[in-house]
Image 1 (cartoon, rainbow, N blue to C red):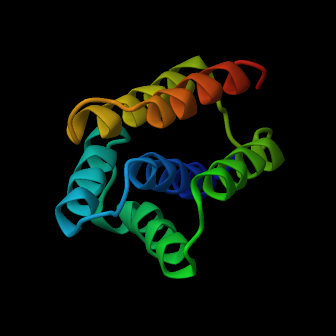
Image 2 (cartoon, rainbow, N blue to C red; image 1 turned 60 degrees about the horizontal axis):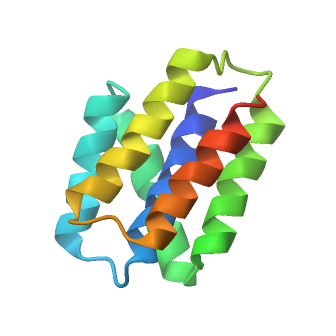
Image 3 (tube, helix red, strand yellow; image 1 turned 90 degrees about the horizontal axis):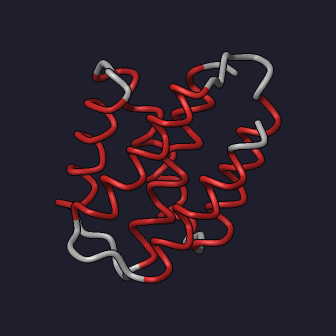
Length: 124
């Protein structure tokens, strides 16, 4: 899987988690970008893949389910093009948890997204 596809999928999942608890604020976007850079050791140009995906989904008013489904479809379609091994999966899960934790107490929908992702990505 090309790294850009992982970044796009993570941008979509970040969006799903962020929108799960309501409107997305500018400071939340910056926090997500910083978390992505740190978790995936991204350069500024690499983090743009996540940022652009996030902005695209927001501008289209994509809901949580659509964002999640897009991410999973992207990962599924590209899983043989990049070594999506256990360490990459763990970083993706960690990234999602950090996003949920960054904005206060996790709500049910955020936790459900993380649990569903953890179960589904195990089959890759």
